Image 1 (spheres, rainbow, N blue to C red):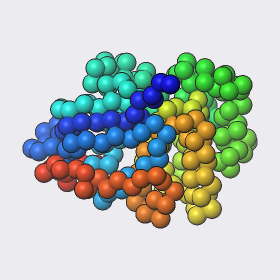
Image 2 (cartoon, rainbow, N blue to C red):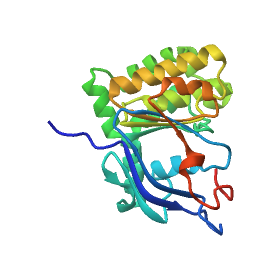
Image 3 (cartoon, helix red, strand yellow):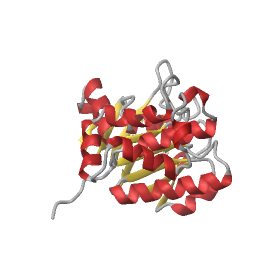
Image 4 (cartoon, rainbow, N blue to C red):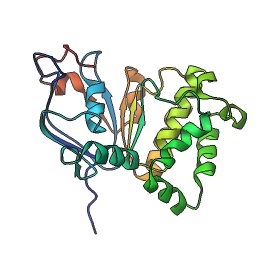
Length: 240
């Protein structure tokens, strides 16, 4: 029986923003198992968003190793990291990163358009990208007529749910969510958490979830305090 690699494994990680005098992130070791649900907390400036950027290969550390699904991100070119991220990491960004002129539906489908592996996983489950986008949208209380509107015409909460559906479609092995419930009311927040956990469990995906809302931590296997993990002297200087 083959052993599935850790979803995230980092060692001796050091990151310093350009022109900063000190490292803003220094984490000696961190492992997130395949399928594990991890809640990451920390005050503003502790480096949470920086860590997520490193996990996604958006930026590279100056020292240490960062592995996702057994692949060393530092060994990949910028283009290869982009392809790897598209195939294996679903991001719910704090600022959503939707294309404002595309419809909500087309924004969801972008994840499959850029990733043959996501399309293949949808097909293996006996569905199509369009059908899967509709299923996820319905679970997130996004009716079909609303999905026809350009993303720029959607409310902040609706945009947040479109971004979540885009992250989940095609069953990536790691889902990274940066303050994903900040624009949702209490009822939709609970529905969102239920969907996120159920979809990750069905796909065997690990979930790295960042939030200031400590009440949500009860849904997760493990709670990490980045302020305690991060030994950087310049954690407040340029950290995000």
